Image 1 (spheres, rainbow over the protein chains, first blue to last red):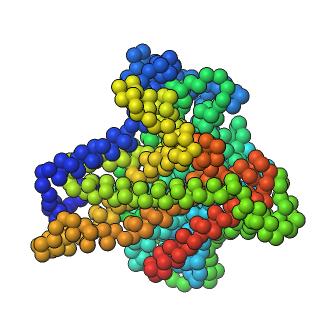
Image 2 (image 1 turned 180 degrees about the vertical axis):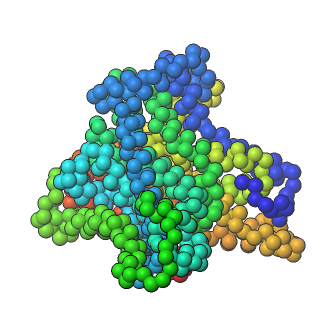
Image 3 (image 1 turned 90 degrees about the vertical axis):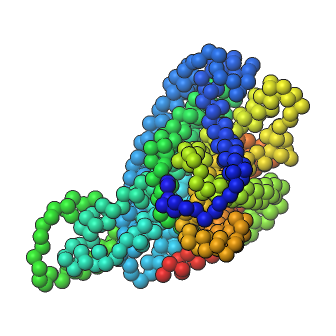
Length: 293
Length: 307
């Protein structure tokens, strides 16, 4: 993001600048190291890993570990690979992100443009809900899912993620809409536009940036969730993170590190892709003050 | 989304039926109500339920025999719990301090009109897109003395190099800090960078004309202006620390021994594998109270300020 300030107030010597570049470069290496190691070693046969150097490039390049991780690796008791779990995750994430984002947008709209007595307290309660330790809700949630027959199912997980995602999506949209000129809404009201019409015609068209921020946030959080998946899912609904953990932690047989790495990258791929494609907007959204900073 | 609101039908001016107006007044509250209901039941209702369970003799299943503070009494006598809390104290303080420092310095340095900033920034930020399970898997391997960094250094000729913290009871908790910092420090960097970009350059130039050095500029003017970013970073990092569960599971599984157990892993194992639900519930209550002690004042101040 090239900010307009063409002449920064801070000036420094060439030497200091070199040091700064070195420091930044060093940290870039630190952040890249694990990814590099994972990618390189996922392309080696197992013998090269156990006998060799993890930093070395493969002598024999192979995509065998990737195929194994995707479709034949032993996960739990079944040799299914990560494929079914990948789809479980997709089936869970897409509706959960969509629902929580829509609810968040509507909530933010109500809380900023249709304020009423007590809305602040309600918002405070929703906000606090973002930060509770989920350990506090695990036991009753397990009971409720069991009683309603949603235990171990994808709809059950969607419900869980929507419920605990609303707080954040509401936070994003509320902060964003708070800066939106209320006069426009009032003018539209005088012209006879109703609640939904104003939302659809005036609020939504200018909500692009915050929708991106909210979708990225929810997508990464829900895709990466482990606790709920581990607690409330079974084979037909277990998400990718749980399957990856089962794959890596399985104590039977030879540890196929190359397959583990391929699996880890597969599990990380969707969020990384979202990040690479839209991460710029996420940072921009953050900078626009969607997370107050 | 309602399709009807899309139709651009021009409405007639003039007095509208009364019920329409009244309906318009109710719509906002109706729209908000499902979310509020969900939050009340699934968050606050559940909190009350778990709170209640923590005073009962629940074991494998919830049971309703009232035992008063017995679970709390037992909890605080368990060395397992004491270890978890101590570990959390070490982990949280290091994690928060290191992430804040690394994030702050990276942001300040990145803000010096660095060539290729657009290239470097995503490198710092991408770990936050990963699951803690992925992070844990990667670091578990890097830190493993047999195949990871130690082995690499040996192969590169530095044979006396030793780095076996992950297998060492006294140091394993620091490997959790390392992996967690790797994952989150880019995010703190982004928050500080956002703060830095929001500072008015004119003030800085004026100060510089008055002869302020770079060091003074940062110490006296820029860093104090980042107060809100510090606060947000602290709040976000501390709640992440208290909730940390996945990373420990993937990186160390709580071991070696109990060396990296945290309250979150303690709660899970007591509730779901050791069938001590009462004690598990009481540990969750303690976690909630710790988070509330940090969050409630913060949220209160935030909401009051933005009238």
